[in-house]
Length: 105
Image (cartoon, rainbow, N blue to C red; front, side, top):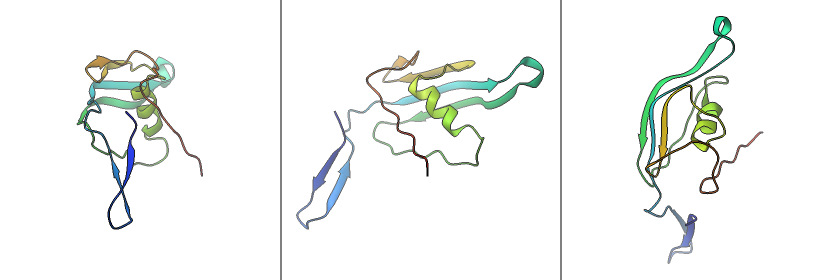
């Protein structure tokens, strides 16, 4: 079910997220790039649980792994270690049940 914009009696709007949205879990996730001798670890041993309906922001400097994290959760990339679970199911690749939007300024 998509998010909904609900008008209130005062003429303003309230953004609501349906409660049936699932949990996002990252368990010991690691991801790096490059050959063994030049390998750069971007994400190391990340464990995180995001409850249904919780708005979460990933903030950090350029090159710290923000886009890599989003790509892993979306299933566009596979972690080198650990697992990602969405709605109780392992993320093994892209799926029609989730969307990602990137913005450039």
